[in-house]
Amino acid sequence: MTSIKQDLQDSRNYSKSDYKVHVSPNNRVVDHCSTYALSNTADKCWCQSCDHRHDQQCDRCELLKVTLIKIQTVIEDYVTDLGAHDRLLHRLRQQIQYVQDWKAHLLRTIHQDQTRVDILDNLNEETVMADVDWAMKWLPVKYRKSSKDQLVKCGLSWHIAYVICNNSSTNSKSFDTSFDSDVSAHMHILDESNYENKIFCHVFDQCVQNATTVISSIIRHIFLCLRQTLPNIKFLHLRSDNAGCYHGSESLLSVVQIFKETGIWIKSIDFSDPQSGKGPCDRCAAVIKCSIRRFINEKMIVQIQLNF
Image (cartoon, rainbow, N blue to C red; front, side, top):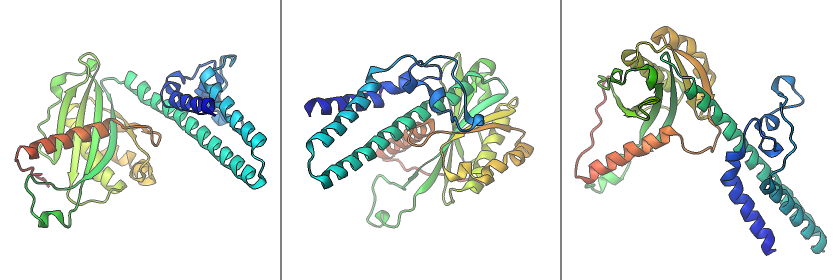
């Protein structure tokens, strides 16, 4: 039993770390080939044949399969009670299905993230990429709070947009952060020879986090600000999570109307896989909130001015 527990722990550590590194579209190990795993043989539109042979095996992937077979053998050989035998086998089948679902999720995450990498590699002077996400609501805070300040708090909605452009084809001086609006925008240099980014943080006193707010108040305003600082921008790749305000019909059908108002065409709309880790918007939100906490700890008052 000690060896089985150790094998399960090693398989778990491998799935959480090195498995993602080994996944690729042209891997000769069948468990690591995303082209083979994501193809549906029953539908020709969703099937792609591999241009390589799957004639190799991964010892660490096979270790998990062998360990699960060992557990099943132990249950069948040493559990004599019929009721306990059936319950344990049923639980084992459930856990095997959970492991397979988790492994499939990891593979989809790597394959989905490859789209982001391909977009960044093909950015030009007319194209930018934007990650958008709602941050967790921020409760009002003070340095010294009275008892009444602890009651009936209403959180502020924060929306973060992380826009990336290719620095090799644009002038860094074009990023003018002086906007007369309710947006806090900051420019940071990622790599002087590759990319620049701009962060848009929209703070709402009261709003509903639906497609109407995202399209009419946020996306439209971001596009207008981009047109002021980067007049050559014509296309934008939009990436978000699977929230309903992004992938609903209202959001997808508003592409034409946004293009008529701003002159920027949404070239693609991509969604990250659920539970695939923190994105750039989450990291930016953490930095902004840490700056606010540090400012408050210095006995300062944070005021948000909303322009209409």
